Amino acid sequence: MGEESTNITSEPTFFVFAFFISENQRLIILATVLVIYLVILSGNLLIISLICLEPRLHTPMYFFLCNLSTLDILYVSITLPKLIYVCHTGDHVMSYTSCMVQLYFSAASGSIECYLMTSMAIDRYVAICFPLRYSLIMSKKVCVLMAFPAWFVSLVNASILPCFAHNLTYFDMVFLKSFYCEVKTISNASTSDNTILKITIIISIIYIGVIPSCLILASYIRIIYTVLKIKSSAGRWKTFSRCTSHLTIVVLCYGCGTIFYLSQSHEKEIVLSFMFVTLVPILNPLVFSLRNRDITEAIRRRIDCRITSQV
Image 1 (cartoon, rainbow, N blue to C red):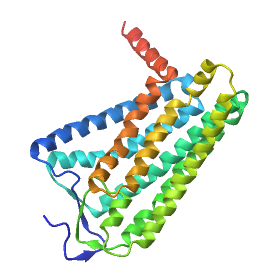
Image 2: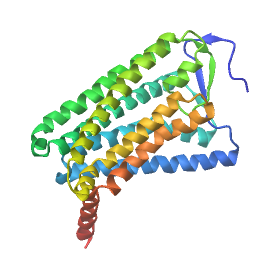
Image 3: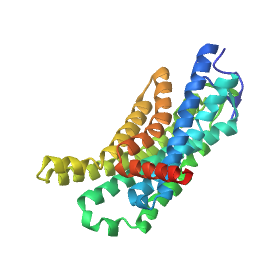
Image 4: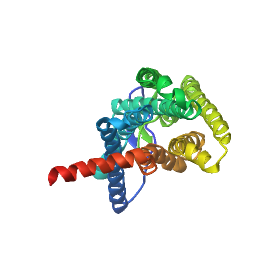
């Protein structure tokens, strides 16, 4: 099968060919992706439900975690269902509109996640460095003022990329070596000069990647400095352990994203993009629940209440 057509258009038909595999392998990937999708949905819905139902979890950290779980559900729901459909039917066609919708929400989700991670880092910074003033500084109003711009600005800013992508020209049939439409793949598929789009991507990376990562780094430098002043090693570990869940997700998120955008290998890009889409959403509930006493106790209370109601 050829990789391009001779006709030029601004609204092509996209074909997603992430995996060149046999029928049996396609069914294995279908079952794997379906299980991953259901695990992500159930895990993040559990986190959201617990935070909403448990008054003890109505704190800034869990408010941002609830936002993050909501975002993870949105992110995988615009990418994985199409991959499941392709594996189930063998139909690789994706309309231009569907591709632009995926492009928009994937860009918005990446931006929102970076800023939510930053908000959580600032929350941990205030909690450890200013414990006596924590409840005063991180009030409900402040939390909303930190979360709302992350969503609003990211959703507005992400609309720029589909606009630039729409002004590019493509062959009337474009074969994407990916399982979803994201800005790097669309930019490489264009037949016209995409310099402006590439400049926009670089600016976006600085805006949604570099600046938040600098704020996160600055927060953790201050946290580490405060922790090191604690005299006992047990006290230092107990204090810093309040950050380990968040730090784990930050490293995975930025690590996968950075390697993906710097990668020059199509095969590696497919694996890395799949990890970027699935790894953080599937680990978020696990990391924050298994390493968090508040979450595990909330789950235990809910189970006890359910058992008591059935007796």
